[in-house]
Image 1: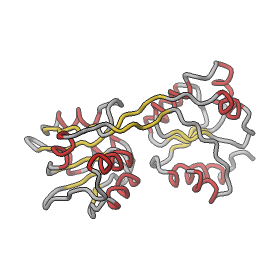
Image 2: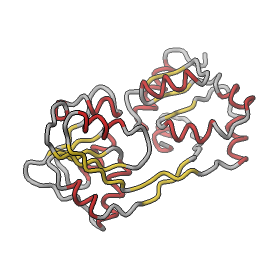
Image 3: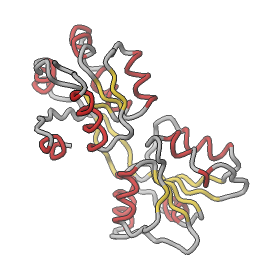
Image 4: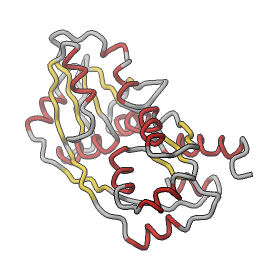
Length: 236
């Protein structure tokens, strides 16, 4: 994100509210990777799956179909040796993934889901409702961390020509819950870029009015959406 922002002449203030911790998935990961349909939910899931296996590539089998929530996850899978990856074109989120043709009718089909615990659980629940036998491998988990008071002060003191980028409800909650009401009110006056319609709706519920919808969570897509908004007159 820092490199992508610098390429557009922008500066970045990172606010980390989560850290990713590996989970030993063991046999669950082996079972998920052996399924005819294998779904990865994030680039981190790919990285931790590789780390769990102490390998540079994933074991592609003949006839398997590999699916990714977004382009970043698909790119990570290709780097891990999976040449063909299905990815949603319209929206890079759970709903977009579940709209793929391969996942519509799944009676008796084994589907591997490589992910992290928590979240909405929409993918696994929906696949099961469509008849799939879902083999979940949680290869990492999210652990909350608190931004430093100095970093929160910097956030509150940003110039008027600044915007918030949000690609995770859980990460946003980790920031929002630590801000006093006056700081929340000031932050909500800034434009915010949301990586999905679900996040946009959540942010509207928190009082944000200037919401820009990006087509995905990758740095390039978030910043392209912000650049288009700025080009259309934001901050003038």
